[in-house]
Image 1 (cartoon, rainbow, N blue to C red):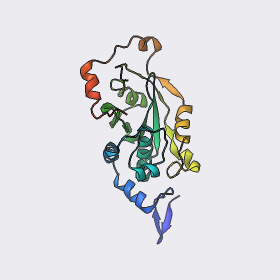
Image 2 (image 1 turned 90 degrees about the vertical axis):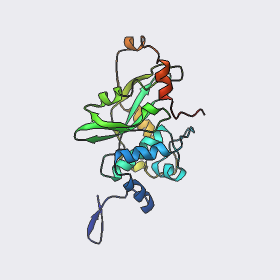
Image 3 (image 1 turned 135 degrees about the horizontal axis):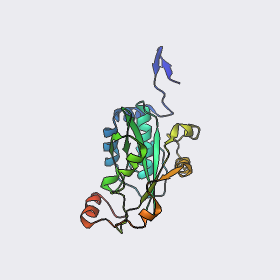
Image 4 (image 1 turned 120 degrees about the vertical axis):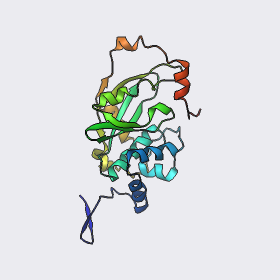
Length: 211
């Protein structure tokens, strides 16, 4: 419910401080959120920081970037929705989802150039997930994306304080793992996929940092 101050309706703060709210309200478009994520150093620790922790530490990885993006979208009037992209011989990838004029777009933090922002042009989540296929590969050049999840609305995790917790919010990846996943193509197709060509491989590695 909105709070009231001086008789006027105010947006819910979701436990965020005034400074945190100012930061998120300034990220009032998907493009601005993506730019903010791109400027954060990528971290490789096995963590699941809340948006509050990411803002304070000023770094984050794929999961943490998507959760921060979901929080920023929420503060600016969108539902906080994320989706899991599931891979083989590779890490999964998490995307914050937004919708404009009935079409889906995505915001993501990644070390790989092609696994980040998507403009809102996709009619279905399957179309959006498929848009990541060609750029989703491991260091052996294998195309690794296989399935995508149903969207997870993080509002249902509000009792676990996913936006502000000081401890790791493992409830978020647990919810994504538990969500139903849909294959993008049959296994027999996956077994015959060619490896990525060298030029495409190198283009997608722009900005990648070895850890």
